Image 1 (tube, rainbow, N blue to C red):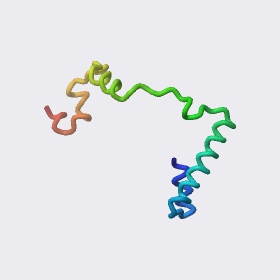
Image 2 (image 1 turned 60 degrees about the vertical axis):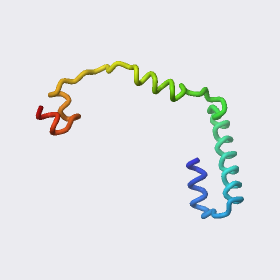
Image 3 (image 1 turned 90 degrees about the vertical axis):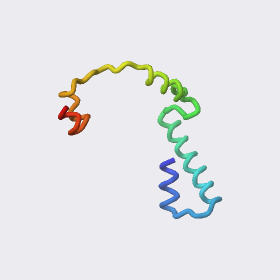
Length: 83
């Protein structure tokens, strides 16, 4: 996406059809480069954990570190440090 964006800007593409052709050209070249260097094509990458599962896990996770007021002063700001 960044390569296409940069090429569209560099070439000052304003026409929708030309933008589509540019996108297809850059995409093909990027895919060819991935194949050439032996990388994994996007469609072969396993999906990550679903965001809903991540949210549930984060909400239920217990904090790994507890700070007392003195240690947390910098995180709490001036008011928290004075307490």
